Image 1: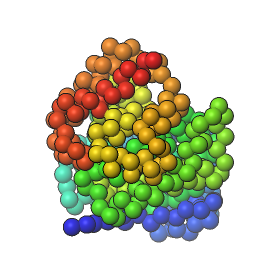
Image 2: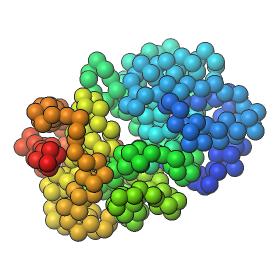
Image 3: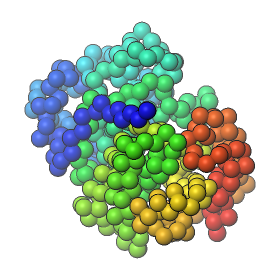
Image 4: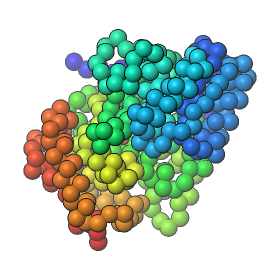
Length: 373
Ligand SMILES: [Fe+2]
């Protein structure tokens, strides 16, 4: 059976938030804005959202303390702000971290008698406050997925909450990318690429999910040149393609979930602080190498690469050497990643080839020599 489920209404335009302010009216009289740091202020998204809310005479409060890879504790704090102010709906503004946190906050606010453990309990009848998401990066695709990944310090890793939380409305405007620093664009764009590859080459993929992944891979490939050369000066068209690729990647993983590269990446992010996109994309070359030739060539062809080496060169150009870490430390963390993922047969079964511990090791350690050269 094939299914394609995506209940989020997606509006994409220049100045989409202010132009469609009236869309916010149906969600209530008071909003909680969930953001990380000052980036939403700097890229103009906070200004647009508050302008739209004022235009519609909707009151708001905000929580701007969402850190990268947000913890359950941060979500609880943000929900506290929302509860104290009796908000009716939640607006998440930012990258994957802010949007993922906003989803979990929307669940806690709709279930005031439950504590944070509820986020990781199974409840097919879970409810959440209405949710609007405004992405300001080109990577997570969280605005169109039901997934919220949080850091669980007690378990020393990142974990998806048990509930699928889809936004009622996603407002996509490429202008927020224009002020994004180079590293942020690189990290998030490679996250989107990992989503596209992991979804396309996934045992759960369908013709419908592949349609999104192929369109996204082609968009990503059409502007990959912005990652070459000594100057990073993407034009608006390039940024739009990256944003589109990210949304399409989100649509694709909303159907299939992510695969082994994402599964291996979490300890690298948790223990070494390596940004999520850079960490997930680190494993793509090894993952591609394990696929059959036809599938690999198909994927490389959509992007415009001739061979895996083209991808490795581009990754290395963008991220350089892993200077933050000693080789021995990385080996230890990769071994831990293999160990953890080998206990997750469901994730391993998403790969388009048989997976055992040796295969996981092969993928995890594929770049180890290159990393320190
Ligand atoms: Fe990701």
